[in-house]
Amino acid sequence: MPAPEEGRPESEKIIRAIARGFDVLQAFRPTDNFLLHSQIVERTGLPGPTVTRILHTLQVLRYVSVYNCGKFYKLHPHVLSLGYPVLARYDIRQVARPFMQELADYCRATVALGVRDGSEMIYIERARDKTVVTAHPLDIGSRMPVATSAQGRAWLAGQPSWALEEIFADLSVSYSAEWPNVRKGIERALELYRAKGYVTSIGEWEAATNAVGAPVFLRDGTCLALTCGGPSHRIKPGMIEDLGRRTVDLGDCISRLDAGRQA
Image 1 (cartoon, rainbow, N blue to C red):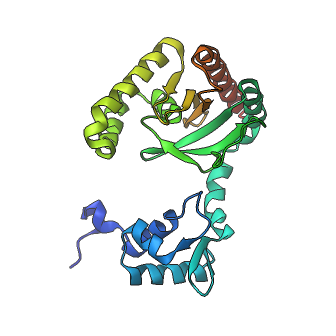
Image 2 (cartoon, rainbow, N blue to C red; image 1 turned 90 degrees about the horizontal axis):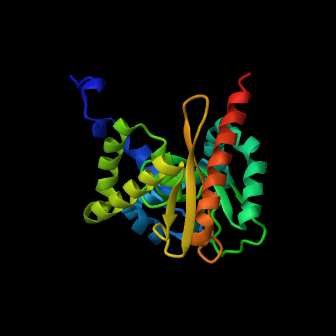
Image 3 (cartoon, rainbow, N blue to C red; image 1 turned 180 degrees about the vertical axis):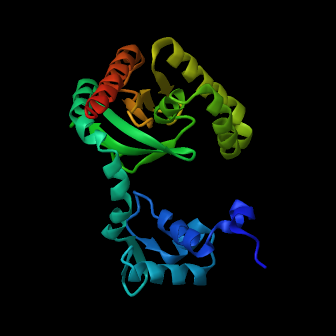
């Protein structure tokens, strides 16, 4: 008799075919135009014939487009239908965006709201000053690490102390030998948060990028991360304290706007 579902290890409850399908979808990155079959095989680590069958299924379901007789693959816009219900749930971003744009224009950089996804943060909204020019701009759906980015540290700052050790245990697996130094960076950021209400990442996520961040608490208990940052030639050390205070104030404003919608 098969073991009861509730008695099985979590790994045995996974439907492998579905998991592999998502592995293939996640092989596509924002900077990709098209991918070859061989590139998808390399990125997923799946056997070539398996990738072929999955790609055919995704094509039939309109999640992948095929070009040049099956030589090139690209995500179909239909994929957006998977993410829209999630974004719609965070409708506070539409209320917050004009205020985010004001701060982005003030500092001539980028302001973003994000949520946690495992060891990464995902942008759900962003405002960018019109003078910001970059080859690969961060936009809605962009990802960055929890541990070293201001986005991630802002989210961590919003978590209860009893939950941090479990989160740190998960992150330590990703960073392995680097974890002790990475954890020290997080702890410095959390100390700053306790003192001033915001966190920083000064060249720790990317060498030429500086950012500040603060948690945003919604009325349903959700914690978002709000950040303001950009290249170090724009976000200079002397600006950090001012931008930190402004980011905290904006986060408080977003929380109040969200609470006011309940009335």
